[in-house]
Image (cartoon, rainbow, N blue to C red):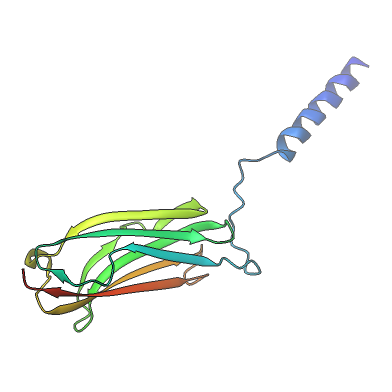
Length: 147
């Protein structure tokens, strides 16, 4: 009888531990589940900038269905030449539940390729676990004047 009670208790304990595994994240992107990502670019805005300015970047990437924000990318490129002066983060896989806020500051100067009288695009992109899954892109364009 003691062996039966011990066996019963052991089986019950194993069942409870495996049945209540809350550490397993519910983030796998099921193609039938709409990821519904949204990007809010708070900074920069479309106002004209000047060579020598500091450009603040503040972007919120959000899953409107509380799914995982798997990947993000922020880049800034010259509209005419497609020359890229910014491409971050180095590791696009941020894997955050619900939303992810990205911030940075860069100098708009000739050392990093910014010239006066040029038009630039900041492109913010978010996507799911696989490339292109739920992908959303937002852009902000701005002009850079001389100092």
